Image (tube, rainbow, N blue to C red; front, side):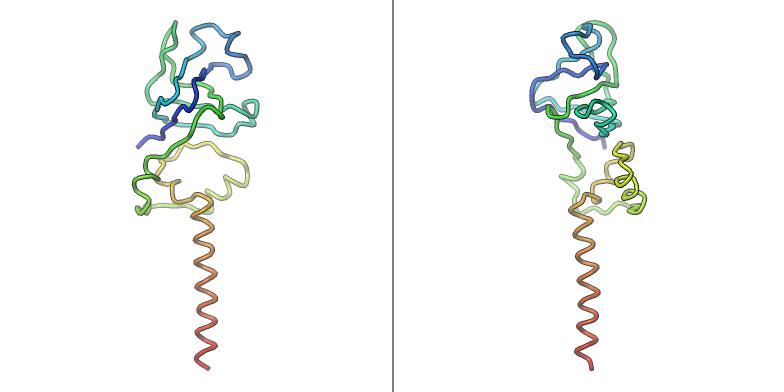
Length: 152
């Protein structure tokens, strides 16, 4: 299942994040409209690589600019889009078969925010879920200590 990028404001996707869209040729910009939902095959959300406010996105279906050939990879202005995971909305109770929490946390600590894994492996690893798991583990330890103290 693909990641969805929803456009919140009319915006321009660009082939060169360093240029203002008004300075780009028609074949190097795509006019995205508010409400548009586009399936994504990969996304690099490390905006610090792209001026601090852009993501590098590869779409499942290439996007056709006003002129030239359709292209799959574009730079998008972060405030104008929302990253959505259909799996996290509809299958929250489904636990993925393989979750490597340590690898995921290392990537987050090291600033690697690119997404190339299936969404199902990421959906339960949001910070909220990790905090919940930590809370449950510490609560279990405390309950065990409490139970042992009551047995004496």
